[in-house]
Length: 85
Image (tube, rainbow, N blue to C red):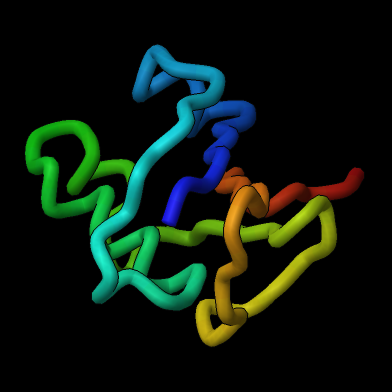
């Protein structure tokens, strides 16, 4: 399944990447699976997307949970939590 992935704010800066199109293996079925798949790249990917890191996710521009199922050509976005003030 091919999807579009976007990265924002400090996630984008750390990865030095704004977006990418990825062809996922059949085992990646949810937004949380995408995060795990990307973390498996190791290095900075594990640091930025690792478990325990505060990270927000969106599916087709709507905030979501890791359990959100994917669909062909969907968009998944990762970004840090926003603080107000």
